[in-house]
Image (cartoon, rainbow, N blue to C red; front, side, top):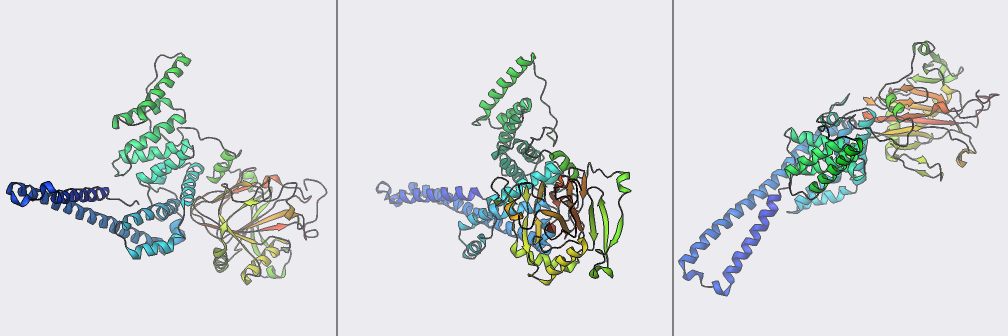
Length: 547
């Protein structure tokens, strides 16, 4: 939703003031001081006044249009906030809603503030000043936009699906306007990401061509789109789009020069290939697979993203036949004898199990309540410097809870010890994480590879991971293991457990795993990293490296 500025108001007001000043100056000029002595001259003033009244009416109309723009904004936001405040997490579970919230508070509320400041409203400005410190900034808006692109890539969703809100599991409708799509494309363009720039500029053009009203000039969209298509190596289509741009705006500053440049490049390519004539440009609309997505730093990107979509999971009938369910009493733990934990095999090798009813709804809500005030952007350890830092491949917020913070945390810690048979005395604090729009953690190891980080020398490496799922996720958000093709989907109240190290203490490199981007929903998890020290008699060392 964008604030519409009545620019006509600014222009009319300026003309009104200039006209008034010119008219008044003519009255005060010595050469015109005796106008009253000539009816003929006075009749000119009648028409002057008529024009002044007309200018005044246009000024009033512009003021009313400004007020209507503010009213329209307020009414739309009133309806939106009534729906969003009923279920904030559910509303923000739709990634488009999350992106548009970032955009509204970073950009559009400021535009509204500028509009209101033309006729200052103390109450509004005071509220803006009080709340501005809590507003997302430009980086938040950029981050939310990049999250939509990440979801688009991971789940192979075209821009049309996002723009029209056609996502699996959504409970709230949300659509992107021409301006939203244009801004997405412009962000990608500014970072030399021409692949996504093409997809979003094409969507903006498609919506405009279908008749959607927009402030953005079509020439601007074609300008960005044609150059981005050129950067993707599609000269014929770049030429066709640039010709459209020239037809719309023959005086465009760059279009003519770009068109001549593209045509020279294409002629040279044809000569090099020994062709005399270029085939007509492909008129098929640009789709997700029209151009190849550029490679990035992650070698297993395709496998990882396929697993996130539920593709390529290597669960064969033979493997499934080796999976069982059982009651787990933690080797006759007194706390589990009367009510043992239900355990299901998720994978055979490496062995991954899921515990059912590992957390109650009341415990989950208490953990979230304790964590929310402490949530901060999750960090990773820089492999070169050893310093904790934020990274684009880990997008979530986390908090650390001690057993002393609340009896619920102490009880959960004790339960983890009872179920796994491992001491948590040397384990890390309970880490609580919440994944936002497009939240993810790309493939990584939980254990530290040699040489160990200095902070692991006392308690040893991360022997095992215990992961609580504290919410259901409508779409996306799986925990995947690219090495052996496993995908584990979040189920509220359950927990999964696996060993990161062999009994010999060597890292099990098969356990490289990832938290897939959350497509729709709000994903809450908590995990306990259990360390080696104190486990000497609970999980004795093996005699060979692979034990």
